[in-house]
Image (cartoon, rainbow, N blue to C red):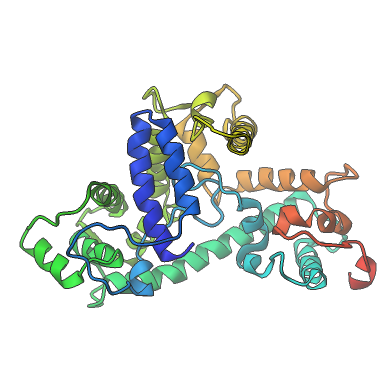
Length: 367
């Protein structure tokens, strides 16, 4: 997802959340579909906008909805790429359908040999757990490197901290507003004349900003706090805040817990054709399975904030072990609770997103 799409997603999701709270599910579904089919383009927000396209550095200040190695998106959707992210780490981009199958097969064999730490040509759940933790840490390290660049974009004077107003100027500049004009208006406490959607996004970001401000609260963010702002998975406090936000958006009766019906009702609603109905059915089926088999750890039919927090924590070793067992079960054709090379090659699409042709050809020679 490029920067314009990220901006657009923030805007649409802000509207969607507002509509969700009003139970306008049909309109919510329409907004969700439009977000994924329209070309990324700046919203027409005010006549004071600067027509100069924002720079890459400016766009990097926007908090992402998708967090690598985290099972759920910030908007409450399930992370469809989670299995590949925790199996491939930063090598994920090297696997695609256009790549030469033999090249992908060799890469997958190389990964298998690395996961198989005791070299018995079989991957156990413990070995897979260790690998998942390593790959998740890779995503953490990558986020920290990206954060350094992002922080420099909002801290041009290099004093090591950023105020909310400084960030607000950069945020609006990244959306095409004239940076000098916005900075002057904020300095003089003038009305910025923002549209309702942009204002709601800013209010949501402001809440998140102050949550990331560690005690003693000084209303400034240093580089580490800014990392928590962009990547809440790096901070236990921000992880709790992210869970609170997700529960708030899905919780229909206000009890700060999630029932199965609440968890699967987003964005299920009015459908007009069979294709939309199929998408709707897939949504329900996937979320129902995740709720019952993974998130609801005590199987009481209710997901608490604590359960959701454990589920969302990418560095939870117990979760990593459960994930390892689930990943092995998908391809464990001989039912020995381990993963052999021919099994991982046969189910390559699940692990890498890339389906290998003639997966068994020359396996023994290449291995």
